[in-house]
Length: 324
Image (cartoon, rainbow, N blue to C red):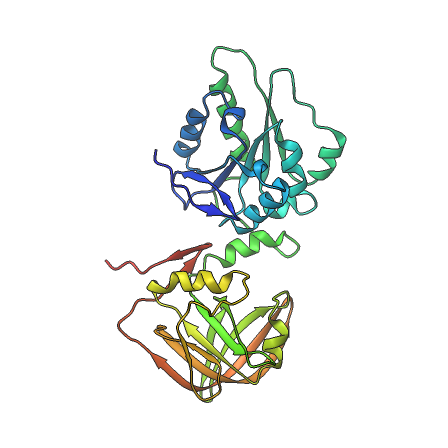
């Protein structure tokens, strides 16, 4: 097995197994989870699970907040495994929205332990929970692994997930993530004439006659009023070499344009230099649609580079084209 050290939600993580398989998130120092934790990781990988380890989440200033951020940004809803000694920091991150952020929780308890306080139990309400108590049998690690894998097959099965009206929104989000999209940076000018931009993958063509395109913007975006008031905007489709640019415009920072080459055309809306394609638009219509705005623009000018490959986004990760 090989491990890689990416960062998710601001935390350093290690991972093993196929990223396309269901995620099992191990939380806390691994030696607290099992006396032979690498053996447990191997058993999970062999059972068709993608194991992610967040060993140092409780070393941050607020471990619960860091964990909630990780659960929000992780590609799909994981099954969580933690020890009884880290449970007090884990439980608040799962409070209220636990079922939306995780599929189930396994608590590995020390010998003779296994009780969950009423306060913690209330925080975990609605989330399937299993407690595995260590014993001194002939092979305690094997017993723990068997109990964990059996629980996962019942609570986080590998077959297709189903969303129905009233189900938790994370299941729907994961289903929508199965639709591969391109990645764009949408730009405009604010009331002071300063450039504004953000990363978006909810972009689509609408009509050729008249030439209309659209993108969707969350009402929770800090830039929602700027785009609502803007008479013009631009959509820049990114190529595979612009993944860092996507990251810049996806983060909250003072000046996203500081280290990005850009230009202007007729309306002043920022055009990212070297993009795969850019569309300058006049705002045609804004439709209120649930927790998003659908912003429709009439294309007044476009430019594209046909010899580059697009940056793709699928199931929470950047992808690239693969040719047979």
